[in-house]
Amino acid sequence: MKRALTDLALFGGPEAFLRPLMVGMPTVGDRARFLARLEWALDNDWLTNGGPLTTELEGRIADLAGVRYCVATCNATAALQLVLRASGVTGRVIMPSLTFAATPHAAAWVGLEPVFCDVDPVTGCLDPARVAELITPDTGAVLGVHLWGRTAPVIELEKLAAEHGVKLFFDAAHAFGCTAGDRPVGGFGDAEVFSLHATKTVMAFEGGAVTTDDGELAERLVALRNFGVDRTGSVTSVGMNAKMSEASAAMGLTSLDAFEGTRARNRENHALYASELRDVPGTEVLAFDEHERNNHQYLILRTDRAVTGLHRDRLRRLLEAEKVFPRLYFSPPCHLMPAYRTDPPLRLEHTERLSEQVLALPTGPSVSSEDIRRVCSIIRLAAERGEQIEAMWAQAVPA
Ligand code: T4K
Image (cartoon, rainbow, N blue to C red):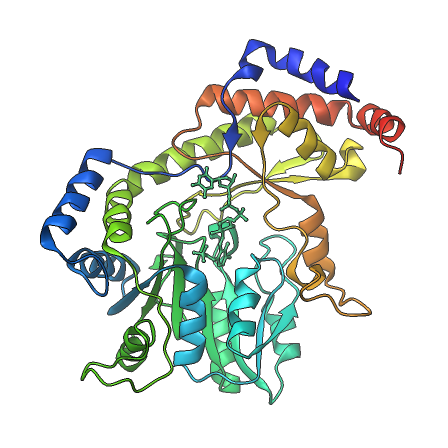
């Protein structure tokens, strides 16, 4: 098998020895501006707990999301926990399984039961018809996920939630700066949660942000992220420490300054991947809905083994041998992770099929056209020789 990998390296030529290409390489923006902001924070002697840079970031995110309130946090996982706690949700929370483990973890950590729901076979987002089937008197909330920046069916889910009197939230970790139609993500449901993790389009090293139009909810969140200390200074709720530091806010603001440029570069990258792989049977670069704005942060390749003869995981290994490091966003789906797997296992047909087929590929401003052509040439070659590679693999690595 080693020889086959080397053959592919030869195909890549000397370029194959270039720097590793990873998913999620950080978008820092103007480094000098970041350092100036950091200096300013140090001079200002205020480094966390609702500092001026955090407040500025919150204001800018609220404007972008078209909402009245934004509460910044140390990460999105904590933000999801805070939102569920602050909203008084009890019982079960319906959510997709095709998501990062943080989505169900957040619910489980505040004593709620994640209920995994199947998704639309094309978008990978919650299927409202399946959600409706799962709503019971024990349902406290629905938690949609805007997977890969594509918005969940927000209007249908808002209607469902209103009909059944349950809360509705969105995990918008992937959807900074995205829209559903012409409405910005951030204002749907009772609240939405963005991630500002280092790998995200807008990043704050680590960070999260809740957006909402509900002033009382925002006030409870502000207290809960700071040990439950309310505006009078009294500890009136069982809070946690989920504050954003000024260093993170400085990074967030600087990355946000660069956002439109980042989005444009991601979009170009997406178009190039799509055109390079257009005629490779059994592969599909997932398209975006032209009726909405995406941040194009994730480049998702869908591979069909029935056509290529090549297992998705084998393709991943071949790319890794060429210093291209895809990520399995998201595989296995949450309901099949040891932490959530039941016996017998829950079956979610569309979730499982998508999960077996998708691979996130490197994109972002630091990924060049040459990089993308190189990645695509490896995929093309691998897809064309799928059965041959599988046969060699089976010989080299007996089951
Ligand atoms: N909901 C959803 C739907 C999410 O996808 C996430 C997080 C959350 C909620 C929770 O948000 P946070 O609590 O994190 O704010 C990464 C990220 O850590 C995670 O934030 C993200 N989603 C998830 C999809 O991806 P991993 O397990 O892939 O590992 P990580 O972060 O070590 O590396 C990811 C890739 O990025 C690798 O290719 C390496 C590269 N990388 C990473 C870091 C940290 C860099 O190039 N530079 C870096 O500094 O989770």
